[in-house]
Image (cartoon, rainbow, N blue to C red):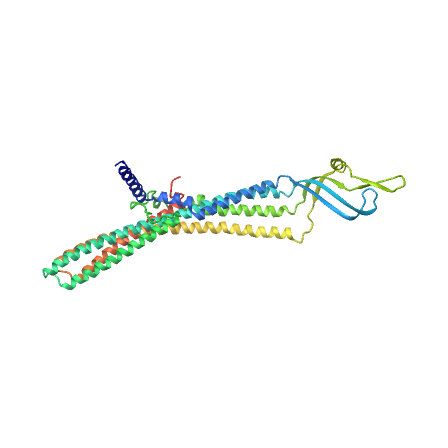
Length: 456
């Protein structure tokens, strides 16, 4: 009995968890945040920022002294010069040498300083690139989100129309049986119901595909249960249309990321010119080196007559290392005189890149101005289209109601009545389309004005 109660409890818990998982719906803010955290392109852009930080470490390293140590050991077997007598004889000689060198740039035409400044600018540019990627992803997510909402409402319209026509089919059967309308009208309505079924299937497929597209933007694997909130009340909450295009453009010039990227790239190009010019100047380096050597050989021992009576080992290792050590230090001045025009050509190339960056800033500013005024015009046109579609829908609804009254009493044939229904459905779909088109264009304008899609 207790076991059965336990199993029942487990089944209830699993059902509750499953129902909760399936009832999860995503808001626009949740979708944007999740996409920014998980999108692959954004992760790649984050790696670019890390690369820029490594570049700064390289630039800082240019200011530090270089330290290198070296050591070697060799064997010479056969006919070698005796290190004590200078004579050639067959023997095995070993040599060990060790040393260390330290070098530091004292002056290098300010290249190290400018390289560090360029590295700092590259970090800023990488951050702007990451922000631009996040903004682009946010806009894509918003567009895909609104597409899901549009398809949801469109599916509702198609289902409602199907329900109306099914009721109308039942009503027409009664009228046919009563002899009020010919049987051919019933066949026309039956065909209309079949067409409505096809429209529902097409609308349902479009909704599924739009959900799949949004789930892919979010990098979600379990997209089968993915759904979004039915937020049909989205509107111009920030009253962005009350602004003038010039005011929106002025605000965009101050804060738009793409313009900041172009300006930062211009500063980087200026540093490249300064770095290239630094190669014209002399360089001064300080250095210090230490070295010592040790040799190993069987040193012959001679008697009073000059005959070899035996051998003895070389002096101890550390004694030789101490006796043979040497040090040197100083400074090296290098003055560039002629390097096959390489320095001059590098300066010219960097100047060309600088001019390209200047043109890019001007072009980005022109593009921004054109995009803002175009976006404002599009938003205004979308608003007018939405308002007109609402008026048209009211008129189509009135015409349909009048046609239904006439059809019910046999004063209108089924063909004309179906035409009225079709026009009403098209008007309903047009209201939905223009509504979400207007909402998306408002979001673009808000982006240019510096209003984010989500709150931090």
